[in-house]
Length: 65
Image (tube, rainbow, N blue to C red):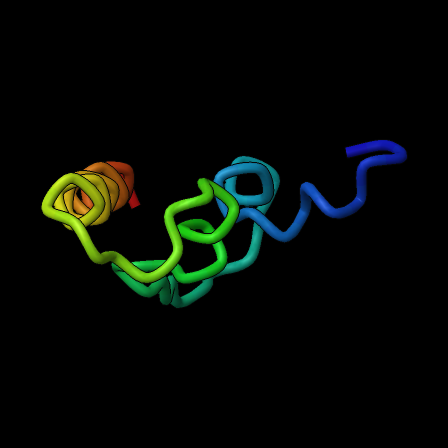
């Protein structure tokens, strides 16, 4: 990731370069990502909908793992 070492924190950036077997563990609702997306603790239906949509999208990314 060059000078942007913080990008290595995200599994989708690291996964393609892994060569050793590993166990993948990921919270379905990643609080760091929710805060990064400026959602925070959900209070409205649209916030809850966004969080659940994010969870479905995350689950879908693991289909090939």
